[in-house]
Each structure stands twice: as structure tokens, then as C-alpha cells.
Length: 472
Image (cartoon, rainbow, N blue to C red):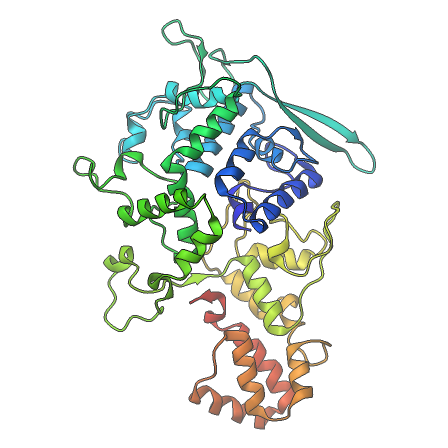
């Protein structure tokens, strides 16, 4: 799910239709890569350099997804450059710089970006000027199905000759109308003998310490909530080195630049083993701290990770937590897909599934899962979320004794002891036992309402407690 968000795995965006088969191929490529613990630098190189059939070679769909519609070819070259920088290096200023120089635009936002020119970023886009994406219609009935064949041409350049499209005009500068490939982030030695332009760029990107910093920052944020650099794709390259701090009034950007660099170099030395990185983080004292803080908390403590920071669960996690707590997983068919039915929302190949169940899709949308295109994932609360937890059929149908297989139904068969039922519902729903006060209160309710009604009500109440929605 995380990498699906990062690489925007979807069937259709506002710019391009990968089709469900392209989406599925991309999803399976990422799933198989993570399952096999493929080194992250290898995965990045495969995505950046992929060629072939978008329905057969899942990694090809990364390039397909960077297509920019309604403009000249240079707009798509720019789209590739923007996503290389943002996704693999955590640098989002390239999108701005491909329209204009950084000076007088980024001066108050990004110190490194304020020194960069549009021409510098064109050099990054030029690495993609020989990429050919050929759309092939393979069926017209019962719906049109089209795939993409991606290859590298032997010739092709980034030309400064456009007056339309999604970016400002591209005019020759000082008589120069052809931009050669040049990495604006590091000097990697240029294109070597036998390399395609994309292969050269992939080699340079993945050997850059910033590549390692970026993925460490993404993974750290996922576990620790607060990233070293936030937003996590907003790195300022001039503000990262404690031994060379930026001029006043600028400050170092990361919350802990020494730890960020140490983890980045550790990851490089461990062959970009993401599983090992996650183990290192989760076994640390910092990760294992309690969310409780015994003294008075001050917001200035946040950069020091002085306690565990709570995180609202993502939409899919909430769905799966409800299904697990109630004992009734889903059963969803993926339309226009060869993927098998799934039980858990974390198995959905994109954030518009399940297209076969509008009620569940609406529930997930209410919790801000986004569409991986124009609406990105959010974790803020809303009245709509509360109403869904209170009234959605996805919740209400799972708490009843007459729903065969529900946790409530199983408990009522296993025991007639209210205390056992109460303890079990707390443990399976909130992952904690009831307090003495809670136990006494619910024992009285069970005696008043009877086991069936009280158990159903208790399950519903626990699902609607605020702490059910948060990771502590």
C-alpha cells in the first residue's frame, strides 16, 4: 500500500489510462519485489529504465504513469523528471523549476531551489527525450483496452521550441536550442559507453546519498509519524549538512541530520535492504517508547522523539481492523481484473477499489484514502467519518449475533459469563483489557440488557471509541 501510494498505482489518472491490466501488472511487480525483499536500488533502477509491454512488464507502468496529456512531448519528459526527483530523491522543487528559475520564486521556500535555473532542470528532463511510448489498442469490445509498449529510441533530444502545453514557453537560450542530459543533483560522470540515457540516470540517482536519505525519510515517517524532513518530499539540499550549515536566518532542515545521514549510509552499506532497515527502526528504543509522557509535554520536544507519536490509521487499516475485530473479513471481486478476490482492503491494487461494492468504497473514501492522482491520502478527521463508524452497513452488519461467523456470535456460543465476553471484546477490538471501572460498568449493562444485546452494543461502542482509530 505504501509503495502503491508513492508510485501512484492506479488504472486511470487525469493524464493517462494504464487500464486495469496495466495497474494489475504494476501492483504485482511491487508486491513481488517487496515480498522477495529486492534491494531498493535495484527496484528503482528497474522502474526508471523499464522497457517492454505495460501489461506484461509491471515496472513499465511507472514511466507510463508519468505521461502528461494535452501538451508537447517535452511536457512528458518533464513529468518523468519531476517524479524521478520527487519519488526517488524526495525533492519536489523540480516541478516548480521546470517552469521558471528558482530566484524570486523559491527564495523563502527552498534555499537550494532558489539557486537553480530552469535550464538545469531541462538537463534532467533530457534523459527521457528518447523514451518512446507507443499506445496499442488490443480490444474494442466489450470495452476498449489499450496497452503501452515502452522502448528507447537511438535518437531524440530535448528541444527548446514549444509555445503551448502545460508549461511556459521553451525558447532557445543564447542560441542553444538543444539541451543535453545533465544531472542537476550530482556529477556522476555522464553517460558511459553502452548505457542508454535512462540507464545512466538510474545509475547516478541510486548511487547518490540523497537517494538513500529519501527512502530512509519515507520509511522513518511511516513508523515514527514525524519525518526527519517534512513534507517528506521537500528536501532542501543546501540545509542538510551540520558541518556546513546554511547562512542565517536559515536553519538545518532535518530534525536530526546526523541520524538521518547515519541511517542513509547504513542502508547503502546493507545493500538497500528495506526489511533490515525496518527491523533496525522497530527494534530501537525510540520506536518502542510509550505514547504516554509522564511530565508536562512541550511541542519543542517533537524533533527528539521523546515519546511514541500516535497515528490515525489509514482508511484501509481501519477497514481491516473492523473486519478483524468483528471476525468477518470482506469478500471483494476486482472488476475487469484477473486478480483473485480479496478479503482485506490492504490487498486492493488501487484506492478506487472495491468498484464492486459502492458502500465499502464510500466508507474508505470518507477516511481520506485519495485516488493517487489529484487527491492524495489524508489523515484528518471529519463528521462524515464519525457518521460512517456509527451507521455504515459495513460496521453495523458485523456486530450482530445473527451474522454467522461474527466474533459476537462465536463468543455467545462459547460462554455465558459476561466478564469473559467483555474481556474478550476489549482484547480483540482495542488490544487491551478493560479497566476495573469499565468492567464493572459493562457487567451492570449485561445484567440489564442480556448477553446478546449487550454484547452487540459493546462491540459497536468499542469500534466507535476514538482510540480504535489510532496506532499508539
